[in-house]
Length: 430
Image 1: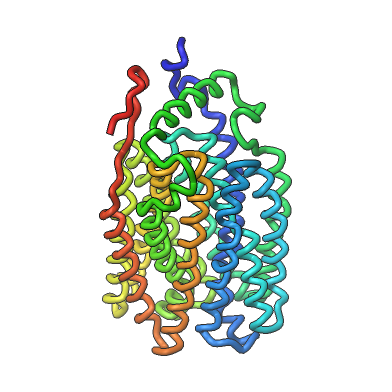
Image 2 (image 1 turned 180 degrees about the horizontal axis):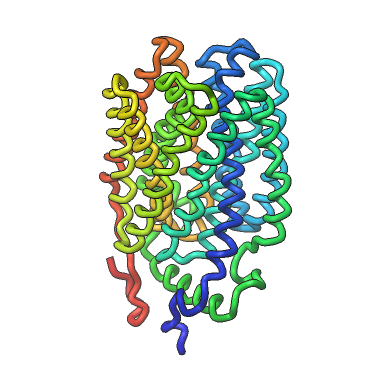
């Protein structure tokens, strides 16, 4: 059997069983430490004597810190070691997650949340680089999707748990308890992760040969895209992805961090019930993420699979606002909002490699993720400010509806070519 006849099924799937679960649980922990603040808003406002807009600022300032290590993190992962970078991040962010539970005033809260963002900054692009070294382009939407299942799964775990802790203990214990897992997982990460197939001892020679073959095919495609990160940064399509990702994060975090407040106000229930209801939208997201990413890989279509979930999510959010007089129907629309909003994510991150080669991929992903994630600051802050101004969540949700739909329409305007390689002729086809 020649290399060209190898298939993923024939060489085994060790990388899927080894890399994805460890990376999945690592970022599940990170995401829990990021969004649990939504359940702490009410307690923080009373205990620290801050307004809803200040609470929203505390939720969002994380993303200013998050910006600092995006490009450096992607660069370090590309040139040196994603494994070592993420290991250090695990230890540092665990510390600041715990410190959030012991702050005594608004200033300390802002500082610790900012530093938590710095500590987590770079982990996302570093992990994307790690996955790009284990999964060829034709598998990457599924690999990204399986890893990014951590986003809804973290919320499914976090929402009921956080609601229970806040109701029966306090918001301080919420941050302390949920800040401990990074220290445990750091050891697992170090023992089980390898930076690439070349440094791994746990895959067969056949699987390694298959990956070398597929990555060589991917390198043939790279003749059609930017060869250097400096060139990539001047590519208008890269900057359009930055704008799109910014708008998506405004919508996503503006919705996710205030979702417990919206549900609690709509249902008039306690924190424990609110926590269980808050988990339901993420169950829907989990299902639709799987469907969307698998269909994207099957059809090799990326643009529509990124755009339509965002547009449908915005329309579902609008539907929830128009049906608040029917609580059950409004809740269904809220569930569909998150259900549609998240499935874009695994496919979105297959777009940068269509424009940028491996040499510039780390810094480019860091640029998109870093600047784009500043939307995670503006989303919660805008919603909090509008709640303070209007004493209602309606105006904030309308704003989020608009940015989600605009983001989807911008994706549809993006010029994307789905590239395939004929390995027999070694020709690039468009």
